[in-house]
Image 1: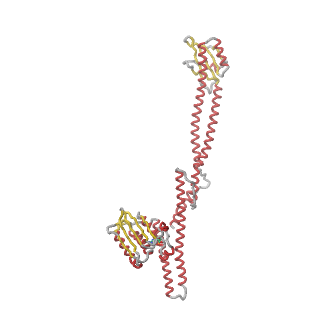
Image 2: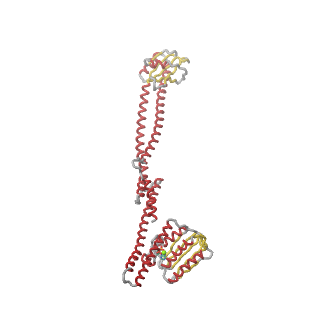
Image 3: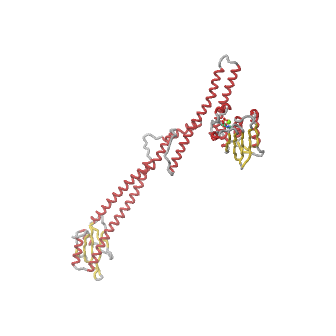
Length: 480
Ligand SMILES: Nc1ncnc2c1ncn2[C@@H]1O[C@H](COP(=O)(O)OP(=O)(O)O)[C@@H](O)[C@H]1O
Ligand SMILES: [Mg+2]
């Protein structure tokens, strides 16, 4: 009953959680993740490739200038040693047969030799005033993007005085070609990196989100009431922990579902038997011509069975209340001796009736914080079992004592005992060792379940030891 109510309450909420508005694009987590990764990688690549490109271009252009300057300096060195026309001619020839051009001028600008016809661009450079000039030469024109030539100049000395200049020229189309080649390479490399990273991200985001999607499907199944969920073996991380939790939840729900079904089946079975009796005997009792005595006997059976049903319903109701924690434990300080004495006196006549010797043993100084009404229910249930499952001329002991700061209440009988294999189950609901025997003694197998719930609600514990044919001993441990 309780479970059904719970389900009704929580079902709509679960449905809402999984409901998707029609026509609304649901971003799949793998796409989102992939997009975020791609965006980050794209930014990183743009920044790093721009940086790389700038540096490469810069160092390549720098190399060109250096080589131009070095060639100029070599010519200068030559001219400082041999300044005859033959050497000049030789220098001009060398320029004409390489991709660099050379022009040698005097200090007044007069051209001594030139490997190239002087056009307006060269003239412009030759006219640039040389203000400072170091021994390693100077760069005269460095605008390789717009100008036709890049140029350097080195001065050559004679008798310790500057006697002329060696101008070196290089056509910028060569440099531009070189750089555009470099750009092409960088572009292809970036493209390759991007494509391979996108492929990698695609598989990575799929791999990362796969367990999440499996879990989503699993929770969807759970919300529909299908608890037969098996998730793959979890990895050793947060996603693994989540998967493990969902698996545990599914297993627990499955167990609860099975337990509920079994419980309902047992209850309907328990109800069916007395109701069949009631129905059958009511039929017979209504027959005409039945003797007064017979009718009385049948009506007594009907009454007994009706009482049995109402007892079952009461015990079930008790358990349901204990389960829902609707009942509250109203603890008060109880003088244990007086409390047990009064319970003892209540049950003594029934024990005497059956010829069982009931013994109470409790020191006078013990007191305990308990709910007396609930705790009496516990003792009565346990004593009722001893009474039911013991034969005449045996003894049942009700003892209480303090040990290691704990109060122990022991109910020990010399009854039929409980088989070892049944011991772990006797606190389960509707569990009885011998169903046919229990029917004659009138139990439903709910007594010990109620006892356990009450003891646990008091923060205590109950254990059982038993031997078939020798007797049973229940021990209640309570903190003082
Ligand atoms: N003192 C006892 N001696 C022998 N068997 C016992 C004793 N107490 C409990 N049992 C066994 O444990 C089962 C569960 O006990 P309980 O929950 O009180 O149900 P019942 O309604 O049958 O008394 C009983 O059916 C009985 O077989
Ligand atoms: Mg009982």
